[in-house]
Image (tube, rainbow, N blue to C red; front, side, top):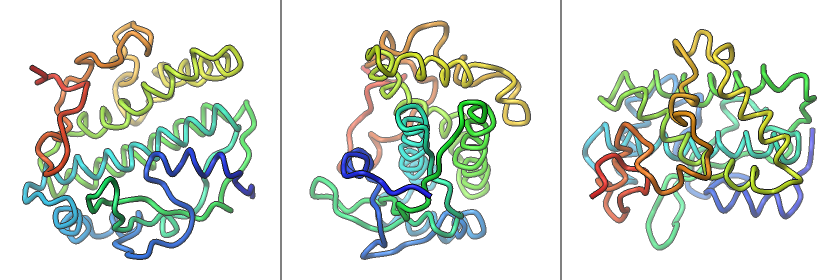
Length: 235
């Protein structure tokens, strides 16, 4: 198990991911998957929306930030968080003057990843934190599976833009992006690479602040939030 540096903690904090126990615990990832109705009821209360689809998308954006950061730390540090689902906690925390659903974890659960393990690790991350969460949320809301996938892709797109622009990180970022674009990575998850379809043959840097999404994340429908820069409904 690895101990995080202060810089790693700062990076996580910038994406609403915190080390330690939440002061106001809400539920764990394990609890979400076993009782999504109760978890989504809490998310609706915290986010301030009565619409289940909006609340589900709001939540998957939160865990999408974590999934994208998992891929970021895989590229930068050759590490991922590998704790149990009941150790991945969600808590109520104030962010920019608004109560939000933030993610809390044990920093000691980070492990090193060998380069040869990357395809398996990337697939496992997509399955555990996007597909399984999406399938769970779809049992209690109308938000589509693609909405949840694109929620994660938006954060990943920015990370890849930054990492591919740096000669020191570009080779590893390119390698992980190739894994994400490879249809074999998606076997059992989708008929094709949803990330390759999302990119539509373009480089990440060319897609920033464009209407790259095909679904709306409903950020504009959450009180206190604004329309995201990738929205297909952008005026």
